[in-house]
Length: 140
Image (tube, rainbow, N blue to C red; front, side, top):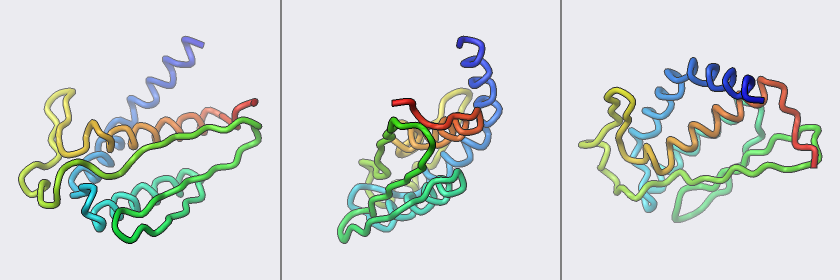
């Protein structure tokens, strides 16, 4: 088990440039809770990424806030796995004019890097890694 975890870590580390590129793209979009257009754009990008991974994505229109996105992938296992997150940030519209994604060494900064755009990027890449490793669903 430990060896497989190390191999998984190594494969994900090799994908770090792709992960950071997606994170930069998302972080540089204003997506404050009350800025629907920005949250919807983040949702569109994440929806594309999930669809490329094999998920069926449904977007539910929300009139005053960013649309809700549901992504479903049916596998052969009996159990269910839920990954839950949010696409908005606490930063108001206009923040990214002055505060863009930046990386210095092992530290990345920008609106939403830690909460929760970074988590969404990690979730997508972790799901891709599980699927590439042959994950076919939870037993139950």
